[in-house]
Length: 135
Image 1 (cartoon, rainbow, N blue to C red):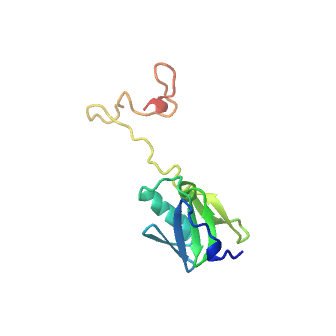
Image 2 (cartoon, rainbow, N blue to C red):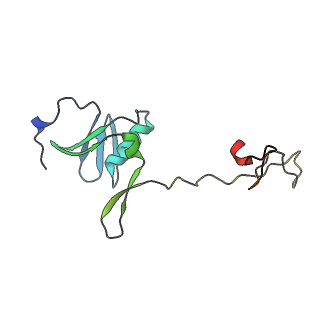
């Protein structure tokens, strides 16, 4: 659907982005490149401290291509294949579980003597609560 330039709202109230080619997007003085450049520019804007609730409108020339209600939501998305070469949006979960496992602490440098607050899987506090929830 082609929306003539004159038909676009004069005041959008959000960020305006320009899509250039198939792999570049510019907004608010930032440039992003990649297979999903509008999502990448949303991530850059978040990293730069923009309000996650900020909407963004992406144009290619004078054609409105995409309106995003929140750069915070869009920053969490990636484009994946549905298995039939059809692209779909999905929540990026690649960062989940990336933290290192707990490391056993020792008292006085003695190897084998665990620090009283050291994490142990399934350990419980004196009140019976899960130890990990209070660490």
